[in-house]
Image (tube, rainbow, N blue to C red; front, side, top):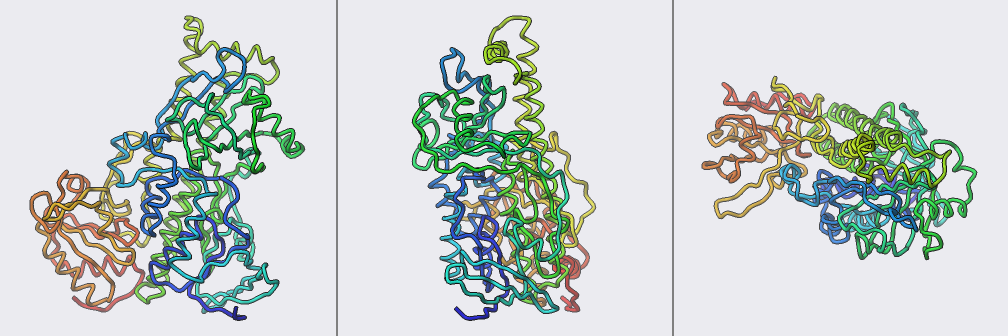
Length: 595
């Protein structure tokens, strides 16, 4: 290994954000290097839900099918359930209180089907990251180095110099890069570039136990992914999630158990005490169980003060850390680098100016802040549910069972209690069905050209996603046919390093202008006219026609990350000049080219 390596982009960190960034940059033709201080990919299950937007990005890098082959089958992640206990001698132990749909109900929820061609999936990081690493190595041979730790960063006007320690060989070397993506979970990079955090900090301490065990006789609902279990013994809420790997649902070979502690008691507990408390909470006694890993971690909600320091950009957990409720942490990380990588490629190729890189923070930081807020609200909703259910740590297990039995008594005096408990559970669709948070987020920045229209109203800002082609919105999903009837999702028309102009049926002038602008600037702009009856491609279900917000003579410009950058309802007096102005603004450049 040479004492000095030169690359365009250095990625620091080999988790979900870093590995996805490596694969994206390889697909974009950007010379890069990824280094991770860790010897391997994650040894912890950690995050596991992969929402539709994230699966689209993972499809871009060619790993979505491999993930789907190992994921929880959609039908077995269609619900979350709440239970009175889990196992034990009590006659109501394991009784289901209620279930709610989760993450599109296994593909059955029409609103989720209308949002994307992909379904949400579930694969823990311990199995996801090896797939991402293998794909990153396949796309960029020699570009991924684990057990290589960055110990120092120095910036100057032209780039960044990183000092890297090869922990396998005990040697040091330097990497010279034009830009750096800090995706190391916040362990090193933010401190080296002087970026702090803001937010609520630590909310609770959590014990997580990853086990192999046969729980099939108690975990009876095959459609339930996450089991929220009220423990009358501990007067608290425990969580149990199947982890596969070969069988999912009740027959899962592995499971993860979580229990949160609002105080500092966990810090003084031994592993044996945590295991004993787990067995007590679940009521499984001495049931055979092999513990793979037991971890203690802090539930926190923090956001980096800024996402850029000169030529260094933060992504993933280095930029934001969430409570796990809602599954927004890993998905936010993947979406961070999807936003950033095409911009780096455009700047490095000379097609865009440095101002485009400023829009990374302008677009992702508010989005990630919203995701943190949503994760916090989900956590607080669980805390409020504890008050509603009313289990008390200072009373006996018998008394707590009496409280839970009120849910099933059918007595008139218990009706209000049961109604309040069921309402609290229904409210948790804010966690398991937050489609407008996962898919409906919108960007505002210099790389978005407003068209003067108002943001579409939603009947529910969390749960209900309203597709729209308003600038700043994600490209609405639609199935598109060619003349031979071959069908594909509209997202497949957008190249990773190319803009796409979608015109109405009679938008020939916009297509001509786009081709002229592309020729004048060297920026790749594809064109297509889409209509139900007329055009070059066809909208058989009118999905695009309903969402596009343009006339037959109008057009929208889609960025390489599949967000709408510009829109014109109809024809302009000078289509070339208007389109040139839009592209110049988005790319942050000045152009004197005339079309």
